[in-house]
Structure formats: C-alpha cells, structure tokens
Length: 451
Image (cartoon, rainbow, N blue to C red; front, side, top):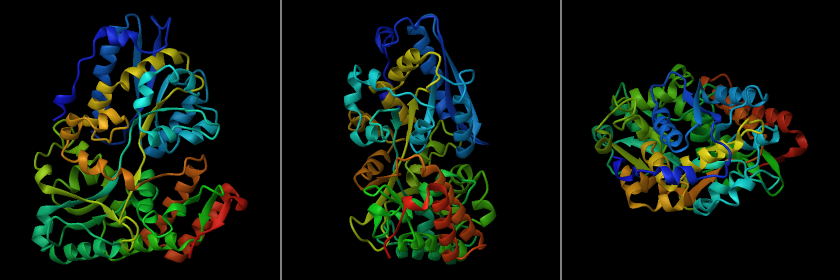
C-alpha cells in the first residue's frame, strides 16, 4: 500500500544532509522500543534499510540499532538509566513526547536549536508538533517523528449481527454504552467495548482510556492541568464522571475481563487477536491500529478495510464540537551525554526528510507531522484511514508538557485499576488520586476542579 510514497534518496542527498562535518569513520548508537511479547517489528524493518542507505552514502560511518524490548513504562525507565552515564548513553533515542520534558528536566537531553536554525526542512513541521518539543526554557529537544489521533473502531459485521445500523456515530457517552449493551445482549462471547485501563497498559490506559473521557467532559480545557495557573486539577466532577464511565464498562461486563484488561499483553491481544477474530465489537484506540493488519504487520488481515468502521469519540453530552481526540507521538532526541551528536543529527535529518517521513508515516499508520506529507495525496491514499484520523487534529488535545505528568499519569492508572477490579468505589478512587497528586507535585501545585 505504501509503495507509491517510497522515494529513492540519492547518495548525494544523503551525504549532503546535516552539519556533522568530520563525522566520517564514527559510530552512533540509536535506541528505540520493541514492544514486549509483540511480533510487530515495523520500526525495525523500516530502520534497517535506512541504516544501509545512510552508511552507503556516508562511507566510514556505522549506525548501530539498539532495540529495547520492554513495556512502555519499562522502556522509559531503561532509556533514562542508559542516558545517565556517558558509558551507556546512546547517540540518538526514540522519545515519547509525554516524557521529553521530564527527561529534559533531569538533564538527559541536549537542545537542538543550533542544528535546527540551519535546517530548512524544520519550517515544514506542523506548529503544534514543534511546540510539543519545547521545554520551559524555550529550547527544542526533539524532532517529531509522527503524531496520532484517537477514536472508536467498530466491527461493522458484528454491528449488523447485533442489529446496530452502520455507519455508526455516537453523539454522547450514553450512545456508546447503549451500543455496547446491545452487543452484550445479542452476541454472547463477543467483548462489547475495550477501554484500556490499569497499570500494566501504562500510558495507553492514561491516554487512550482515561484522558479520552476526561477531555470530553465540559471543563475540557482545564480537565487535567490548569496551564494558566500552572497547577494540577483535583476534585473535579469531570474526573469522577470519567471514572464512573469506566466503572460502568467493567462493572456491567461490557469490557474485557479484569484479568485480561489488566494483563501486560492487552494491547497486542486487542490488535492481533480480539479484533481480527471478531471477538471485540468496539475499541477506543488510536490511528495506528492498522499496523497490526497490513501486509507487513504481525497479523495480516486483508479484510480489515471492509470489516472495520471508524467513529469519532463523542464528548460526554455532545457539547462543544461534539468530538474529542488525544494526540501524542514520538520524536528523535539526542542525549546530553551522546558521544557523537553531530552524526546523530545527520542521521536524524535523513530519517525526517520528506521522502522518508512519508514512507514511515505510511508503513507505520501514523499521522504525519510534516505539513507537506500530511497533504500529500499518496500519503492520504497509503491507508484508507489516514484522511479520517487526520481530520480529528482540530479537535485534539495534547498531554500537559510538564515533567510531573509522568507521576500524574501513574496516579491515573492506579485509580483506574482500583475501579476496574472493584477494590475501590469511584469516589474513593478519585479521592486517592487527589491525595497521590498532592503528594507528587505538592499541595500548592494543585487547584480545585469544576463541579
């Protein structure tokens, strides 16, 4: 599918990119994540040929790929440990945009402004994506590699069997729950709705799960963090309402069993087992889901294009624009203790050229961060879902770009898990969250949310 955007890059172009003068004969280590127990090697398959082309165009250079096999949370921990010491620090690291600020605050990353000011391609990157790379000091610490949006995937065949008309577009949370209850009643053995939850799924729980609900509540702009006051929101009705939705899903048996939902392999199971086998009707998930189903994915499934439908996630009561999405993505950053930052930058420019960005966004089913790629007809045709998920960008939210977010995210996951298992009521889980946040950031850094 992506063949149309695979552009051959000449050796002259490669050798001319970047400011790494004198880099010949040097080596860089490039670190990225390989999901735990996941047969998805799309990034490894993409980077391998990229390295070959780069080394051929730059004789004497060596690029060593270092995949870190770990869950999301463990990956963050492992790369932070690597970046602490010059002996173990990579030269280039793949960073989740949610953790860049905390890694900058810890002194792990170097600013890229001196490189960026002479790189003409930087003007082609979308402003929101570039803003996510900036720290409070005004400097930029990464080159965004992709972004994403989130919505509802649904199985049109299962909906037809359950008597739910398609195309389906719920207008409120209640509409989503009604469809899930209909599936539960009509199709025994089918999981009606997946909402990621708990500690094991890590940021997937916080972002695809909880924050897709929280930012759909009426006080969306200040739902999690009041940027004007620089304080974290506690005690809000929106937070309780989002937890209550989760409680309904798992309390009524509309989601996966708590044991499965809280397992370390839930993301892989959803994409490669539950959806392709027709065992999951609705999935609150991201634009990247076709990664699992395309020809080169871990679960090739040619029927996905005719089987799966897409709907935007509605706001709680249909207020505002009526839709909500969350966006994140990944970026390439250079550690502060990198041995060869110039060559790392040169390789980054190569990876993020228009041609290679188009190729990566197409094979990885991610949303483009370069505006020239986002409007490229070949990119839009590479996957039939690209147009829909790109259209959600105007209604999307980004996670707070402050270091304490990772601690707050962990508190969210803890609250979700306690509600999912029934170990705590919604009220108790929300109260514990408030206490955890105050402990993590300091009581003076919190503000009472809207009721």
